[in-house]
Image (cartoon, rainbow, N blue to C red; front, side, top):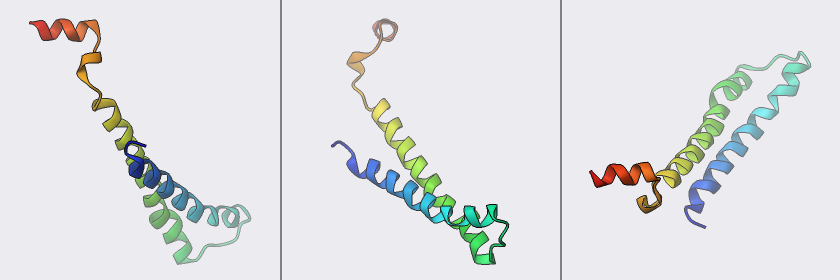
Length: 83
């Protein structure tokens, strides 16, 4: 359960943003107009949640990749360290 807060918050941010945006899509496909608030919510408010979730998950993956011990490096990396 290492770094569970990052995984859970990233997934919840994405889910909240997508669920909040999903209500406008059927209205647009049916040809119904959206109010000014509907457009604001669809284009500005909800995307920052799901984009934020993607960024949190990407940061978690990057942290886990680059926080590995260096002793498991490749032979080329071990050769560079000897010089």
